[in-house]
Length: 225
Image (cartoon, rainbow, N blue to C red; front, side, top):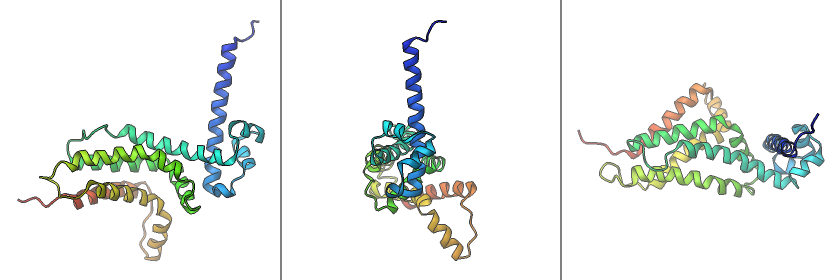
């Protein structure tokens, strides 16, 4: 029986390394969300990933480097999906359609990637010292969102009020993120106010359209009959 070719063996090694690398990142994201950078332990991450600690250090030299890689991986996944969904320029047929597209896309991606919200919440709770990776990675996504608003709204002074598009963008950005980042607070406030509201899929569907409606209503001028 002929031995396996060297190229095939090397290819399998690359596949194994990639699989192990991803398992480590998945374990690290869970550990960092639960305990933060200070409380996380490399041994616990290795145990979650089902590997020994030596192999963990082979892929990532130290905890700080692993933390940055874990944060960057989840941000790149989210921002990549948003950038893919949004147009390169203002192709929606109207400013209303552009805003609604952005809100729906952003809300859907965050709903499908709760680790993104968990990582950001943990970073904020820990003082935000490690948010440099977040800011660096989220920049292109924020730029695309802003340019879409600018393309659709900024040049339409005959139909839209003289509101700087930066405020439209910031309001949209804040309401979408706030829905997820402030969910623990919202839940407690609503309970204290004896308002029964579940943060389930039906509510998030309603919330998505409500955010778009609020941004559109706040920025559209009253048209004469």
